Image 1 (cartoon, rainbow over the protein chains, first blue to last red):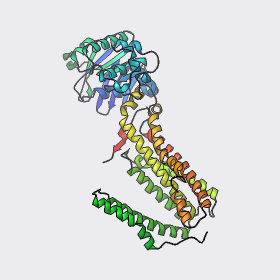
Image 2 (image 1 turned 30 degrees about the vertical axis):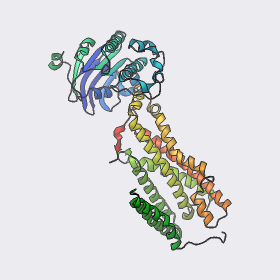
Image 3 (image 1 turned 90 degrees about the vertical axis):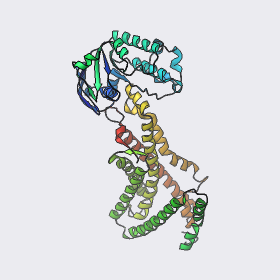
Image 4 (image 1 turned 60 degrees about the vertical axis):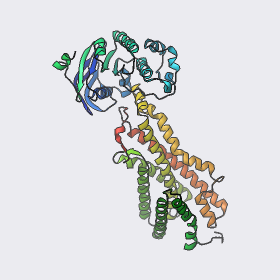
Length: 204
Length: 267
C-alpha cells in the first residue's frame, strides 16, 4: 500500500492519496495544474513535506534510490544518457516487453539519437518496467503514440496490474481514462481534489 | 647573481607597448571593437602591477607574518571573486563564492606552506618567498577551478533530463552525475596539463624567462621553474577536485535529487 498524506511541494499539494498494489489511479486536470509536479514529489525527485509510506514504512526511512526503484516514474519527457537503448536497460532481457509495445526486438540495439518521440517513450516505459517496480507513475504515457501503440500499452499495463503493479496514470484522454478503469482524481490549481468531491464523480 | 642584469628604464617599458598600440589602431581601422577592452585591460595591468610592486616592497620591508597573511587573504578574495565572475550559471547565495574560494584557499595554502618548509627561507613565512609563490599557485588554481565549475554547472543544466532519468532508475546522485563530474575535472585539469606538455618545447615559462633576463643561470632558473610547475599542478589538481566535488554535492541533495533551483543564471 502506497499512502500519501498532507503532501506539500512547490506549486502542488495533496491531502490524501492511497494506492494498493494492483490498483490504478487516473489523474486528470488542466495543463499546468500540477499533475507532473505531484508525480515528481511522490518519487521524491522534487523536495516535499509529506507523510508518505510504503507498506507502513516511512519514505524517509528508505534511501531515495531504493525508493525510486520501488515507486518508479516515467516522466512525459524521457531522458537518455548513453548512445544505445540497451545501455539504459537495468539488466535482463528487454525484448519481450519491447515487442509487447509494438516495436521490433532489435530496437534494444538502436541508437537513442535516431528514435522518434513515440519510440523513446515506449522504450522509457520498458526501461522502468525492467526495474520491476511495485508502483509505476506514468505521465501522459500515450501522448506521442498512435491508436495501435496506445492499445498495446494499455493491454500491457492491465496485465502488469493483474500481476500486482500499482499504477498512477496522468492522461488528458477521456477515453483512455475510461479504458484504464480505476479511481479518477482531478489535479487543478496546484491541488489534488479530494476523492469524494462531487466534481471528480461528475467528470467520470 | 651574474653581472648581466640590465635595469629597465620607464622608457624601455613604454616602448614595449608600441605593438599593443598598433593592435589598438588595427582594431579601430577594421572596426573589431576591441580597442576599448585592450586599452582598459592594459591600463588595469599597469596600475595593478605598479601598486603590487609598491605594496610588495613595503611588505618585504616590514616583514610581519600577520601582514603577509593579510595580503595572502586579500589575494584569495580577489581570486574567489574572479572565479565567481567567470561562471555563466553559479550557485545562489554564499555558495557561489564559497565553494571556489574555499577549494582554492585550501589547496593553495596547503601546497604553499609545504613548499616553504622545503625551500626553508628564514623565517619560513618570509613574504619575499611566500607571496610570489602563493600568487603563482593561486592564479593557476583559479583558472582550473573556474573552468571546472563553469563546465559542471553548464552540463548539469543542459543534461537535466539525462541526470534525472538515471536518478529515476535508482542510481545515486554520484553515479548519475559521474560522466559530467569527470568532464568538468578534465576541463579544469586541461590548462595545466597542456602547460606542462608544451613548456620548454614551445614556450619558455614567464617566470623562468624573467629570471634568465635578470641574469640568473638558466639551469638554476629551470630548477625553480620545475618546482613551481609541480606545485602549481598539485594545487590545481587538489583545488579543481575539491571544488567540483563540492559543487556536485551542492547541486544535488541527500535524497539524491538534482537541485538546479540552487543555480542562478547570470544576468
